Length: 264
Image (cartoon, rainbow, N blue to C red; front, side, top):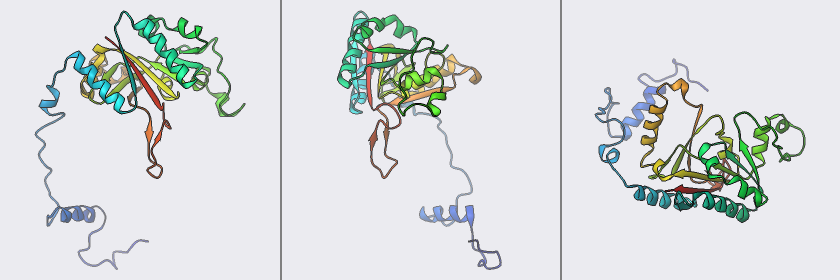
C-alpha cells in the first residue's frame, strides 16, 4: 500500500534518501556524505602481490588447503606419473564402486596413457571429444526412458552416467587450493560438474600463489575477450551448499569428493 504525497508529513524522506540517511545515522553522522571516499590503492596490496614461494612451498600449501576441504592429494615424479595416475584412478574407482568415468580430451592426460590399464580393470572411459560421441553408448537414463533427458546431445548423456570426471586444469591456486579451468572443445565443463567425484591432474609448475596471477596469465593468453572460451570454472574443494535452512549439503551442485595428482 502506498502513501500519497498529500498525506505524507512535511520533510519526510522516502526511497533512496531515507535509506542513505538511516545508514548515516547508524554511523553517527548527521547527514549522508556527499563526496565519495578516496581510493588511493587498487587491487591486492603490495605485500601480497610481491610474495614469492618455491615450488615445494606451493605444493605444501596447496596440499594443506585441499585436504582441509576433505580433498585427497597424491604427489608423484614425472617418471612415475603414468603408472601412478593409472593406479590412483583404479583405487578411486574401487573405493567408490565406480565402473564408468569420463575425462577431458586433453593432450597431457592422453600422454599419461592410463586408458589401457584402467579399461583392463573393467572400467569404462568416456572421453569428452569436441567432435561428439561417435561410438560411445550414452548409458541408461538416470530417470527412466524418454523425457527431456533423451533429447540431449549424445556426449552429454554419456557423461551424465559417469561417476568420476578427470580434468587437467589450466592453473591451480595454492593459497586457496582452487582449480582454474577453461572449458572449450575437448575440455567440457560437464566433466567437472556432473560426476560424483573429480580428479584433477596437473604439473607443479602450474601452481600460482593467488588467483590474480592466473587471471594475468589468462589476459596474456587471450588479449581479446572475444577469443576467450565461454566458461572459466573455479573449483575449490567439493561442492557445498547450505542455502536450505542452513543445512550443509556436500555434492549437491557438483562432485562431492575431490582428488588431485601433482606431477613434480
